Length: 335
Image 1 (tube, one colour):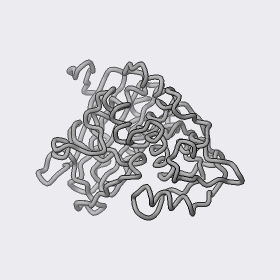
Image 2 (spheres, rainbow, N blue to C red; image 1 turned 45 degrees about the vertical axis):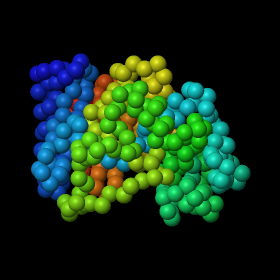
Image 3 (spheres, rainbow, N blue to C red; image 1 turned 180 degrees about the vertical axis):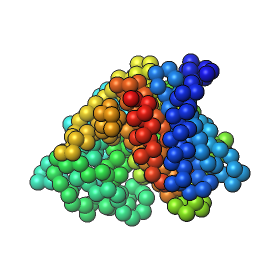
Image 4 (cartoon, rainbow, N blue to C red; image 1 turned 180 degrees about the horizontal axis):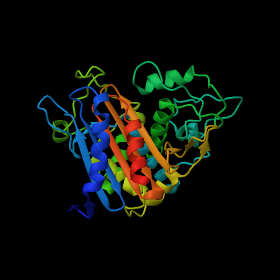
């Protein structure tokens, strides 16, 4: 065993990660790289399989990945900060915080509240069509009819979280990129979490792969950035999770993280949502709070189990199933 900063690395934790990655690797295309990084109490470790580029490099905790929809929980934390600052209200109509060109649809007169966007209960469609631009998003909204009354049914919506990021940046009079950098990444020292990688980060960026294991064309996301545009590393994501476990003291972000995690909506099948976060039970009945993400070329998974002081990040440079592996790892770590 050895120390990494203030965290104790143990062979037992590493063994669990390695065993589960090795057990799953045959289901992943040859050459695709996967890293699993975990923390249990003050113990931290990681394990890897595969490679992340043509040079045959293995992934490391500082390899940069597209994290896709895990971006949503960064938007959720930014929302919680805005709520604590009094810039927006969860139970206020979302439209009042949007630029003037945006008009949100209603259902029998019921407006979409801010909290509806963050819990995927707005009734909005999953995605907006047309160009990835503000004008395209506004045009889509103008012809959108809600599928259900806001606040009543869970319907996953990338469009809803894109609007959430837009209203947060508009309320703060800044861009979404600057909002996340100034309010989350710099205070938490997440130096590799960004919408626009530097040259150094680009050199560490994993090459995405398609389902056949060939290099993938990964889309650049603009308007949808609050829903799926961020890049990050296992190192940064574990620190982000540690904040939500209460292990990273910060006068503003620690209480905001508690706001983001708090349960707010439950489905008939006992799936509970916080602000973008999903709450489900593991096979051992421990509660896992998680989000995953997928883009052509990448898949990501991040979870914490507060009752066991445990956090897990799994990142891959192919859009493949990580959930079953991650669930098994979490269950073993929390038994």
